[in-house]
Length: 391
Image (tube, rainbow, N blue to C red; front, side):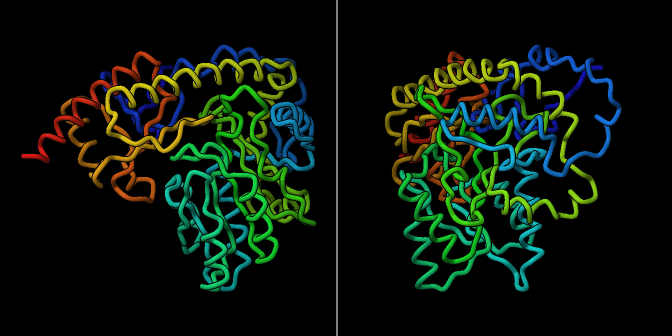
Protein backbone atom coordinates (compact mmCIF):
# COMPACT_ATOMS: atom_id res chain seq x y z
CA UNK A 1 0.00 0.00 0.00
CA UNK A 2 1.24 3.50 -0.83
CA UNK A 3 0.45 6.18 1.74
CA UNK A 4 -0.29 9.72 0.56
CA UNK A 5 0.21 11.89 3.62
CA UNK A 6 0.73 15.45 2.37
CA UNK A 7 -2.92 16.44 2.72
CA UNK A 8 -2.95 15.38 6.37
CA UNK A 9 0.11 17.12 7.81
CA UNK A 10 -0.05 20.44 9.61
CA UNK A 11 1.67 22.17 6.70
CA UNK A 12 1.86 20.42 3.35
CA UNK A 13 5.08 20.57 1.34
CA UNK A 14 4.82 20.47 -2.43
CA UNK A 15 7.62 19.36 -4.72
CA UNK A 16 9.73 22.30 -5.88
CA UNK A 17 8.60 24.47 -2.97
CA UNK A 18 10.58 25.60 0.09
CA UNK A 19 8.11 25.74 2.96
CA UNK A 20 10.10 27.16 5.87
CA UNK A 21 6.89 27.44 7.86
CA UNK A 22 6.49 23.70 8.27
CA UNK A 23 7.32 22.53 11.80
CA UNK A 24 8.17 18.89 11.21
CA UNK A 25 11.24 16.74 10.47
CA UNK A 26 12.28 15.96 6.92
CA UNK A 27 11.72 12.43 5.59
CA UNK A 28 15.49 11.79 5.82
CA UNK A 29 15.28 12.30 9.60
CA UNK A 30 12.45 9.79 10.14
CA UNK A 31 14.10 6.55 11.40
CA UNK A 32 12.06 3.91 9.58
CA UNK A 33 14.79 1.27 9.86
CA UNK A 34 15.11 1.93 13.58
CA UNK A 35 11.33 1.66 13.94
CA UNK A 36 11.28 -1.77 12.31
CA UNK A 37 14.30 -2.92 14.29
CA UNK A 38 12.13 -3.12 17.42
CA UNK A 39 10.54 -6.27 15.89
CA UNK A 40 8.18 -7.23 18.71
CA UNK A 41 7.62 -10.77 17.48
CA UNK A 42 8.70 -11.82 20.96
CA UNK A 43 5.33 -10.71 22.35
CA UNK A 44 3.29 -13.88 22.95
CA UNK A 45 0.83 -12.61 25.56
CA UNK A 46 -2.39 -11.43 23.88
CA UNK A 47 -3.14 -9.08 26.80
CA UNK A 48 -0.56 -6.77 25.18
CA UNK A 49 -3.52 -5.73 23.02
CA UNK A 50 -5.86 -5.29 26.01
CA UNK A 51 -6.85 -2.18 27.96
CA UNK A 52 -3.91 -1.27 30.13
CA UNK A 53 -2.71 0.88 33.03
CA UNK A 54 -4.09 4.42 32.95
CA UNK A 55 -0.60 5.76 33.65
CA UNK A 56 1.06 3.52 31.05
CA UNK A 57 3.11 0.33 31.21
CA UNK A 58 5.46 0.46 34.26
CA UNK A 59 8.33 -1.08 32.26
CA UNK A 60 8.00 1.56 29.53
CA UNK A 61 7.86 4.36 32.09
CA UNK A 62 10.98 2.95 33.76
CA UNK A 63 12.84 2.89 30.44
CA UNK A 64 11.70 6.42 29.62
CA UNK A 65 12.67 7.65 33.09
CA UNK A 66 16.18 6.26 32.53
CA UNK A 67 16.52 8.12 29.24
CA UNK A 68 15.27 11.40 30.73
CA UNK A 69 17.52 11.04 33.78
CA UNK A 70 20.59 10.45 31.59
CA UNK A 71 19.83 13.31 29.19
CA UNK A 72 19.03 15.95 31.83
CA UNK A 73 21.15 14.88 34.79
CA UNK A 74 18.02 14.82 36.97
CA UNK A 75 16.65 11.78 38.75
CA UNK A 76 13.31 11.15 37.06
CA UNK A 77 11.09 8.44 38.55
CA UNK A 78 8.60 6.33 36.60
CA UNK A 79 5.99 7.38 39.21
CA UNK A 80 6.33 10.94 37.90
CA UNK A 81 5.51 9.88 34.33
CA UNK A 82 2.26 9.24 32.50
CA UNK A 83 2.10 8.11 28.87
CA UNK A 84 0.11 10.21 26.39
CA UNK A 85 -0.72 10.28 22.70
CA UNK A 86 1.48 13.35 22.16
CA UNK A 87 1.49 16.92 23.45
CA UNK A 88 -1.65 18.14 21.70
CA UNK A 89 -3.57 15.29 23.30
CA UNK A 90 -1.98 16.04 26.67
CA UNK A 91 -2.95 19.73 26.51
CA UNK A 92 -6.53 18.73 25.76
CA UNK A 93 -6.53 16.12 28.52
CA UNK A 94 -5.28 18.58 31.14
CA UNK A 95 -7.44 21.40 29.84
CA UNK A 96 -10.69 19.47 29.92
CA UNK A 97 -9.95 18.02 33.36
CA UNK A 98 -9.23 21.44 34.88
CA UNK A 99 -12.08 23.20 33.09
CA UNK A 100 -14.54 20.61 34.41
CA UNK A 101 -13.72 21.62 38.01
CA UNK A 102 -14.22 25.37 37.50
CA UNK A 103 -17.53 27.00 38.41
CA UNK A 104 -16.97 30.02 36.17
CA UNK A 105 -15.36 30.16 32.72
CA UNK A 106 -11.68 29.50 33.50
CA UNK A 107 -8.79 31.69 32.38
CA UNK A 108 -5.65 30.39 30.71
CA UNK A 109 -2.59 32.62 30.35
CA UNK A 110 -0.74 32.00 27.09
CA UNK A 111 2.40 33.52 25.69
CA UNK A 112 2.57 36.06 22.90
CA UNK A 113 3.90 34.84 20.56
CA UNK A 114 3.07 31.16 21.03
CA UNK A 115 2.23 27.91 19.27
CA UNK A 116 -1.22 28.89 18.10
CA UNK A 117 -2.71 25.39 17.95
CA UNK A 118 -2.06 24.93 21.67
CA UNK A 119 -3.89 28.19 22.36
CA UNK A 120 -6.77 27.01 20.18
CA UNK A 121 -6.94 23.70 22.07
CA UNK A 122 -7.23 25.54 25.38
CA UNK A 123 -9.86 27.84 23.94
CA UNK A 124 -11.77 24.79 22.74
CA UNK A 125 -11.66 23.41 26.30
CA UNK A 126 -13.60 26.50 27.40
CA UNK A 127 -10.78 28.75 28.61
CA UNK A 128 -10.71 32.50 28.13
CA UNK A 129 -7.21 33.40 26.95
CA UNK A 130 -5.06 36.19 28.36
CA UNK A 131 -1.75 36.91 26.63
CA UNK A 132 1.55 37.70 28.35
CA UNK A 133 4.58 38.69 26.26
CA UNK A 134 7.80 36.76 25.67
CA UNK A 135 11.23 38.41 25.56
CA UNK A 136 14.79 37.09 25.31
CA UNK A 137 14.46 35.46 28.74
CA UNK A 138 11.17 33.73 27.95
CA UNK A 139 7.75 34.41 29.42
CA UNK A 140 7.76 37.84 31.09
CA UNK A 141 6.83 36.59 34.55
CA UNK A 142 6.96 40.14 35.92
CA UNK A 143 4.03 41.08 33.69
CA UNK A 144 2.08 38.03 34.83
CA UNK A 145 2.75 39.01 38.44
CA UNK A 146 1.48 42.52 37.72
CA UNK A 147 -1.74 41.08 36.30
CA UNK A 148 -2.16 38.86 39.36
CA UNK A 149 -1.69 41.73 41.80
CA UNK A 150 -2.93 44.88 40.08
CA UNK A 151 -5.60 43.39 37.82
CA UNK A 152 -6.69 40.59 40.19
CA UNK A 153 -6.29 38.05 37.38
CA UNK A 154 -6.95 34.51 38.60
CA UNK A 155 -5.93 32.00 35.94
CA UNK A 156 -6.45 28.28 36.29
CA UNK A 157 -3.62 27.53 33.84
CA UNK A 158 -0.46 29.23 32.61
CA UNK A 159 0.73 27.68 29.35
CA UNK A 160 4.39 28.14 28.47
CA UNK A 161 6.99 26.69 26.11
CA UNK A 162 10.05 27.05 28.36
CA UNK A 163 12.80 25.30 26.38
CA UNK A 164 13.71 26.44 22.84
CA UNK A 165 10.41 28.24 22.51
CA UNK A 166 8.11 27.92 19.52
CA UNK A 167 8.37 30.29 17.68
CA UNK A 168 11.11 32.48 19.23
CA UNK A 169 13.74 29.86 20.13
CA UNK A 170 14.40 31.43 23.56
CA UNK A 171 14.65 29.51 26.85
CA UNK A 172 12.98 30.58 30.09
CA UNK A 173 15.62 31.59 32.65
CA UNK A 174 16.05 29.80 35.96
CA UNK A 175 15.06 32.87 37.94
CA UNK A 176 11.82 33.22 36.03
CA UNK A 177 11.08 29.51 36.32
CA UNK A 178 11.40 29.63 40.08
CA UNK A 179 9.29 32.78 40.35
CA UNK A 180 6.60 31.29 38.14
CA UNK A 181 6.45 28.16 40.32
CA UNK A 182 6.14 30.34 43.41
CA UNK A 183 3.32 32.36 41.83
CA UNK A 184 1.53 29.16 40.82
CA UNK A 185 1.73 27.92 44.39
CA UNK A 186 0.59 31.25 45.86
CA UNK A 187 -2.26 31.92 43.42
CA UNK A 188 -3.41 28.33 42.92
CA UNK A 189 -2.90 27.78 39.20
CA UNK A 190 -1.04 25.05 37.35
CA UNK A 191 1.74 25.48 34.82
CA UNK A 192 1.42 23.49 31.60
CA UNK A 193 4.92 23.41 30.12
CA UNK A 194 5.01 22.22 26.51
CA UNK A 195 8.57 20.86 26.31
CA UNK A 196 8.44 19.31 22.85
CA UNK A 197 11.99 20.53 22.10
CA UNK A 198 13.59 20.01 25.53
CA UNK A 199 15.81 17.12 24.37
CA UNK A 200 16.92 18.88 21.18
CA UNK A 201 19.79 20.74 22.82
CA UNK A 202 22.71 21.64 20.53
CA UNK A 203 25.18 22.89 23.14
CA UNK A 204 26.72 19.48 23.82
CA UNK A 205 25.94 19.63 27.54
CA UNK A 206 23.05 18.14 29.47
CA UNK A 207 19.63 19.04 28.11
CA UNK A 208 17.49 21.60 29.87
CA UNK A 209 15.88 20.22 33.01
CA UNK A 210 12.21 19.48 32.67
CA UNK A 211 10.22 22.27 34.30
CA UNK A 212 8.49 19.64 36.47
CA UNK A 213 11.88 18.56 37.85
CA UNK A 214 12.32 22.06 39.28
CA UNK A 215 8.95 21.95 41.07
CA UNK A 216 9.59 21.40 44.80
CA UNK A 217 6.11 22.37 45.99
CA UNK A 218 4.30 19.92 48.27
CA UNK A 219 1.81 18.53 45.74
CA UNK A 220 3.18 19.89 42.47
CA UNK A 221 2.09 22.76 40.23
CA UNK A 222 3.90 21.90 36.96
CA UNK A 223 2.92 19.54 34.17
CA UNK A 224 5.82 18.99 31.76
CA UNK A 225 4.68 17.65 28.39
CA UNK A 226 7.20 15.62 26.40
CA UNK A 227 6.84 13.97 23.02
CA UNK A 228 8.49 11.51 20.67
CA UNK A 229 7.25 13.62 17.73
CA UNK A 230 10.44 15.70 17.64
CA UNK A 231 12.97 13.10 18.77
CA UNK A 232 11.63 10.11 16.80
CA UNK A 233 8.59 10.58 14.54
CA UNK A 234 5.35 12.57 14.70
CA UNK A 235 3.23 9.74 13.30
CA UNK A 236 3.65 7.41 16.26
CA UNK A 237 1.60 9.85 18.42
CA UNK A 238 3.42 8.99 21.63
CA UNK A 239 4.42 11.28 24.47
CA UNK A 240 4.47 11.70 28.22
CA UNK A 241 3.52 13.97 31.09
CA UNK A 242 6.03 14.47 33.89
CA UNK A 243 4.61 15.83 37.14
CA UNK A 244 4.43 15.30 40.90
CA UNK A 245 2.60 11.97 41.53
CA UNK A 246 -0.10 13.81 43.47
CA UNK A 247 -0.71 16.11 40.50
CA UNK A 248 -0.88 13.11 38.17
CA UNK A 249 -3.33 11.38 40.50
CA UNK A 250 -6.04 13.92 39.75
CA UNK A 251 -5.39 13.67 36.02
CA UNK A 252 -5.70 9.88 36.06
CA UNK A 253 -9.36 10.25 37.02
CA UNK A 254 -10.17 11.86 33.67
CA UNK A 255 -13.12 10.01 32.09
CA UNK A 256 -11.08 9.37 28.95
CA UNK A 257 -8.59 7.28 30.92
CA UNK A 258 -11.19 5.67 33.15
CA UNK A 259 -13.04 4.51 30.03
CA UNK A 260 -10.15 3.71 27.69
CA UNK A 261 -7.23 2.88 29.93
CA UNK A 262 -3.70 3.93 29.05
CA UNK A 263 -3.06 5.96 25.92
CA UNK A 264 -1.27 4.44 22.90
CA UNK A 265 -0.04 1.46 24.90
CA UNK A 266 0.74 -0.73 21.88
CA UNK A 267 3.07 1.87 20.38
CA UNK A 268 4.70 2.38 23.78
CA UNK A 269 5.32 -1.37 23.90
CA UNK A 270 6.80 -1.28 20.41
CA UNK A 271 9.21 1.55 21.22
CA UNK A 272 10.23 0.20 24.63
CA UNK A 273 13.15 -2.00 23.45
CA UNK A 274 14.60 0.95 21.53
CA UNK A 275 14.80 2.80 24.84
CA UNK A 276 16.27 -0.18 26.66
CA UNK A 277 19.00 -1.06 24.14
CA UNK A 278 20.18 2.52 23.65
CA UNK A 279 19.37 2.73 19.94
CA UNK A 280 16.90 5.56 20.37
CA UNK A 281 19.48 7.51 22.33
CA UNK A 282 22.02 6.97 19.52
CA UNK A 283 19.44 8.24 17.02
CA UNK A 284 18.80 11.27 19.22
CA UNK A 285 22.52 12.12 19.27
CA UNK A 286 22.71 11.94 15.47
CA UNK A 287 19.52 13.96 15.14
CA UNK A 288 20.89 16.74 17.33
CA UNK A 289 24.07 16.93 15.27
CA UNK A 290 22.17 17.23 12.00
CA UNK A 291 19.66 19.77 13.32
CA UNK A 292 22.46 21.83 14.85
CA UNK A 293 24.17 21.97 11.45
CA UNK A 294 20.95 23.01 9.73
CA UNK A 295 20.29 25.66 12.36
CA UNK A 296 23.75 27.16 11.87
CA UNK A 297 23.31 27.16 8.11
CA UNK A 298 19.94 28.89 8.18
CA UNK A 299 21.06 31.46 10.73
CA UNK A 300 24.16 32.40 8.72
CA UNK A 301 22.25 32.45 5.44
CA UNK A 302 19.74 34.99 6.76
CA UNK A 303 22.56 37.13 8.12
CA UNK A 304 24.40 36.97 4.80
CA UNK A 305 21.60 37.34 2.25
CA UNK A 306 19.14 39.56 4.17
CA UNK A 307 21.15 41.48 6.79
CA UNK A 308 18.29 43.95 7.23
CA UNK A 309 16.33 41.27 9.09
CA UNK A 310 16.82 41.15 12.86
CA UNK A 311 17.29 37.68 14.34
CA UNK A 312 15.95 37.65 17.88
CA UNK A 313 18.31 34.99 19.19
CA UNK A 314 20.61 32.25 17.96
CA UNK A 315 18.79 29.11 19.09
CA UNK A 316 20.62 26.61 21.29
CA UNK A 317 18.08 23.95 20.38
CA UNK A 318 14.67 23.27 18.90
CA UNK A 319 13.45 23.86 15.35
CA UNK A 320 13.00 27.59 14.82
CA UNK A 321 14.58 30.98 14.14
CA UNK A 322 12.52 34.07 14.94
CA UNK A 323 12.92 37.07 12.63
CA UNK A 324 11.82 40.71 12.59
CA UNK A 325 11.41 42.89 9.51
CA UNK A 326 12.55 46.53 9.66
CA UNK A 327 10.19 49.52 9.68
CA UNK A 328 7.18 47.51 10.90
CA UNK A 329 6.81 45.85 7.51
CA UNK A 330 4.17 43.19 7.03
CA UNK A 331 5.62 39.67 6.91
CA UNK A 332 2.38 38.35 5.38
CA UNK A 333 2.92 40.61 2.37
CA UNK A 334 6.51 39.41 2.01
CA UNK A 335 5.36 35.80 2.30
CA UNK A 336 2.79 36.33 -0.46
CA UNK A 337 5.45 37.64 -2.87
CA UNK A 338 7.95 34.94 -1.88
CA UNK A 339 5.46 32.14 -2.34
CA UNK A 340 3.89 33.41 -5.56
CA UNK A 341 7.10 34.25 -7.41
CA UNK A 342 9.83 32.17 -5.76
CA UNK A 343 8.02 29.17 -4.18
CA UNK A 344 9.30 30.04 -0.71
CA UNK A 345 7.01 30.39 2.30
CA UNK A 346 7.30 30.84 6.05
CA UNK A 347 5.05 31.46 9.06
CA UNK A 348 4.04 35.12 9.54
CA UNK A 349 3.85 36.50 13.06
CA UNK A 350 0.08 36.82 12.86
CA UNK A 351 -0.05 32.99 12.82
CA UNK A 352 1.83 32.98 16.14
CA UNK A 353 -0.43 35.39 18.06
CA UNK A 354 1.83 38.41 17.60
CA UNK A 355 2.46 41.39 15.32
CA UNK A 356 2.88 41.11 11.56
CA UNK A 357 6.48 42.37 11.35
CA UNK A 358 7.72 39.10 12.86
CA UNK A 359 7.98 35.71 11.18
CA UNK A 360 9.22 32.19 11.93
CA UNK A 361 11.65 30.07 9.93
CA UNK A 362 12.02 26.32 10.53
CA UNK A 363 15.28 24.50 9.75
CA UNK A 364 14.11 20.93 10.47
CA UNK A 365 12.55 19.97 7.14
CA UNK A 366 15.34 20.81 4.67
CA UNK A 367 19.02 19.97 4.25
CA UNK A 368 21.60 22.71 4.71
CA UNK A 369 21.98 23.08 0.94
CA UNK A 370 18.22 23.43 0.50
CA UNK A 371 18.00 25.95 3.32
CA UNK A 372 20.67 28.17 1.77
CA UNK A 373 18.92 28.06 -1.60
CA UNK A 374 15.61 28.93 0.05
CA UNK A 375 17.10 32.00 1.74
CA UNK A 376 18.70 33.10 -1.54
CA UNK A 377 15.24 33.07 -3.09
CA UNK A 378 13.69 34.76 -0.06
CA UNK A 379 16.29 37.51 -0.42
CA UNK A 380 15.10 38.13 -3.99
CA UNK A 381 11.53 38.39 -2.75
CA UNK A 382 12.64 40.74 0.03
CA UNK A 383 14.46 43.00 -2.43
CA UNK A 384 11.49 43.02 -4.77
CA UNK A 385 9.01 43.83 -2.02
CA UNK A 386 11.30 46.59 -0.71
CA UNK A 387 11.51 48.11 -4.20
CA UNK A 388 7.72 47.99 -4.50
CA UNK A 389 7.38 49.93 -1.23
CA UNK A 390 9.65 52.69 -2.52
CA UNK A 391 7.72 53.22 -5.74
